[in-house]
Image (cartoon, rainbow over all chains, first blue to last red; front, side, top):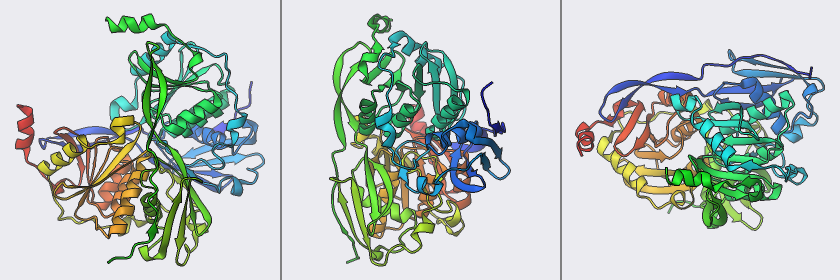
Amino acid sequence: MPYRPYMTNASAPLTREVEVLDEKGRSSLISIPAERPLTVYVDKRELVTLMTLGGAPELLTLGYLRNQRLVDSLEDIVSITVDWEVDAVAVQTRNGIADVEARTSKKVVTTGCGQGSVFGGLMDEIEKIHLPPEARLSQGTLYRIVDTIRTQQSIYKQAGSVHGCALFSAEGELLWFVEDVGRHNAVDAIAGMMWLEGMEGGNKVFYTTGRLTSEMVIKGAQMGIPFLLSRSGTTQMGHLVAEQVGMTLLARCTGKHFILLTGKERLIFQTELAEVLRFA
Amino acid sequence: MPYRPYMTNASAPLTREVEVLDEKGRSSLISIPAERPLTVYVDKRELVTLMTLGGAPELLTLGYLRNQRLVDSLEDIVSITVDWEVDAVAVQTRNGIADVEARTSKKVVTTGCGQGSVFGGLMDEIEKIHLPPEARLSQGTLYRIVDTIRTQQSIYKQAGSVHGCALFSAEGELLWFVEDVGRHNAVDAIAGMMWLEGMEGGNKVFYTTGRLTSEMVIKGAQMGIPFLLSRSGTTQMGHLVAEQVGMTLLARCTGKHFILLTGKERLIFQTELAEVLRFA
């Protein structure tokens, strides 16, 4: 039985209804997603305030600490206790965070929706990361993943204005789907879940509704995942980092359409599948 | 002649072409937006690194310092010098930034695309802000604004994956349109331009392609603008803050459709305009 820190399960209401008027002056109620501050305290020391939907605050906190490389081992974390009464999460560590001042002093305000602050050298780890060159994804599996996302129940369909991230197996099975007002919270929550479950990323596929910016690619690489898919596009630096780490980037994934940007050798084309659509 | 700091005009290339494969294995070149780090040094002291498209780095820097409330008066800024050779901008101030350590130590990782770090109490200023209750926007002017955005030449149309922000007069004239990989850079650049030109916000309308999250509403309020429009939706905290500051929030603005969320008394309905569409 692998080690698990003590964690609360303090999911908060994810939507609320508000009264609006439309262009004809007609009143109606619509759902909008929650957005609430979650201030992270590590050993009673305030670290950061995350603005979050609040669906998976413990895993968000865990993944945040992981992706910021503030905690090296799961065993270092004793407990993660969320209290929405005070919009705070208390993290108790075994030995504290070494050199936390220095490691959180350097601010990089990033492009991605949501978590916009990566402490420390954004690119420092990139050289060390090696994604499995032999990993492969078939076009059919890619389509299965896109269709799974399309049919997924979501806060987005109900209230809009959130980003979704999903972790899939190499066979296209959905392992976890998480949404947040910031997609970087969503990716951090997935990183936290992977860390907690001891999952390795080399045989996984990562999907995000958001853009493939540098920070998203770096986080995917940190998680060791060779495939990063999005319904949106990419940026120059997202593309550059993906080339550097040897990640397979697929953008504009909708229906049977996609564009393959980097790591092209990993995709197994089955173009007859596209033909099916073409003449459907 | 109002005071102006010395500023470079160092706009960088905004797109690059990359080779991609589509779902049928066909190769083509597409444009993707630039995304580059811009490290802000204030009086030779590193403050933050912004990930930006690079279209208006001086105004971005100016607006960033303004929206973070790190500089109180334009006269305090001697020069803003961008050097893309080293991806850096050097800000020289007259008297330095008082208490900069303390004022930049508190991190809030926000929801919005792009600038994800608001230093200091996010809500501190909210109480002091009073947006003009008498300001009005007619439905016809709203439609003019939406149509102006629709027909605007943009990096988005060329390369996707960027957010646009625009400042309009109360009569619906486009004053400035700016895009960035992060919409919070775009709003900061507009704030910088308004500050530089000595523009007041009370008779302006602000448009963003991005979501109306808490930080966007707070920034609009900081700029004194009573109208905030988006083609996207809002979040619970964006809605809450807009109610607190008395801002008029209009979301889902596309074609002749919109939803009016807060500050409803400021919109002058001309429902016959919607009728025209209805029976068009």
